[in-house]
Length: 251
Image (tube, rainbow, N blue to C red; front, side, top):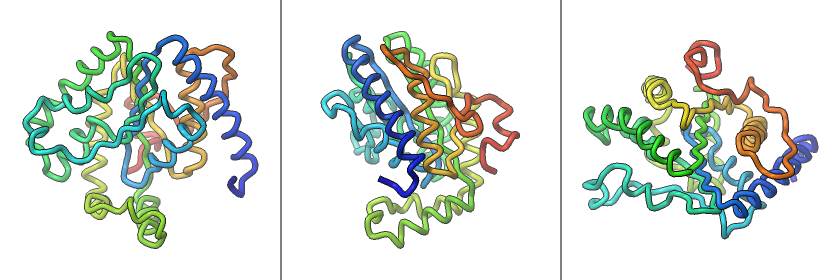
């Protein structure tokens, strides 16, 4: 339990809804894919934990892939992700996904310009195929300010329980903040689609972001005996061009 009783109460109600949602997914043989992307330190790990902590571990999987092997580098880019897609009755969460090629890879020079632009063209086509195959794709981009990112990355170094989160890529996140901003904007513009829309999350307040994401998630899937919760659209909203100028996304 946290020191915030209102947060705890709301989270409990939302997690009860997630249990009901999962039971429906299992009984109806649905296939649900949740993609969490965002800046380093934006709260993806904490969000995954709150979504999954009371769900049946047999029917939900968390996918956080390491860097590709020498063999995987030679494969079709989406190939290593395909084997992790949900089967009937499953919910799969990607804590980062194929969108590495739209963010960290071009910013850090891990892919060519040709590979980058090919990905931006192909991702919407690939996700349309998933949608046609009956996979519900839910994409969230968690965004935080430069100041908040610095605070959170500094906290990782001070907290012995967060040492596993420290990586060489994270160390360069602040230096490349503007580069990631440019890559983010292009990714959102070119890979948002009706089949797999982007939801933008203002994640400077971790707790508010978690609650808003779960509330949005349960709103976007029809399931039996649902009790909808209000979604704070100042925290989570459907991406459109206005998000780039109205303060929803950090600069």
